[in-house]
Length: 252
Image (cartoon, one colour):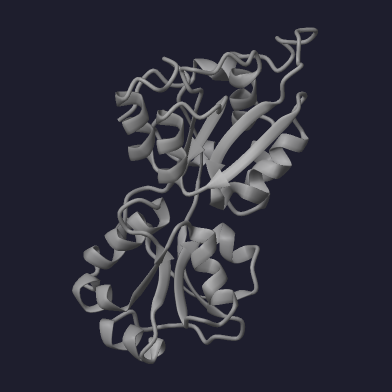
């Protein structure tokens, strides 16, 4: 577990008023956060440039010295890896919000009452189930944990279409190229798909988004932006279907 969290909450958003803001704040973030962070950035006092991608790809870029001032990932393991690499500012890590995992089908798809391997393969009808890469994309990692927990992994592994991020998996379902996909509940809300079954939170690791300031960043508003995410932006996250930070339990 990452420690040294949330000295940031006390950082007032006005603390940097009057300081130089010549350069925009660059944020690297998980693809599933696009709508949420677009809205949060619009409500922030400084200029923000957002770059989205898979959490693994974002983490590797930060570790290689990419010019990010804030990084927000959908998996604690990637933040812990960055921390172990010495790539994060001490005390800057914070858990921002959570999410849920759902099975989706194309618009109009019927609910899936039976989650047995036989029922899932029947729904796939010889096709594949879309999800993020199970070794690097958080949504794919959580999906694999669900399948392993439910005893489905060996039966379904040959029928998977792994993608570079969760939004790419969602697009395959939206276009009708696959009959099923495993995505975040918030992604399903924003797309032309049908939620056919919710996946129990007890079948996979808790889904949380983590933010931190890379060690190489010298931007004066980096910590203030994370404070903004932990405070004023929380209502907007909840409105989009994310689990607010306050509802995530006792972890930092």
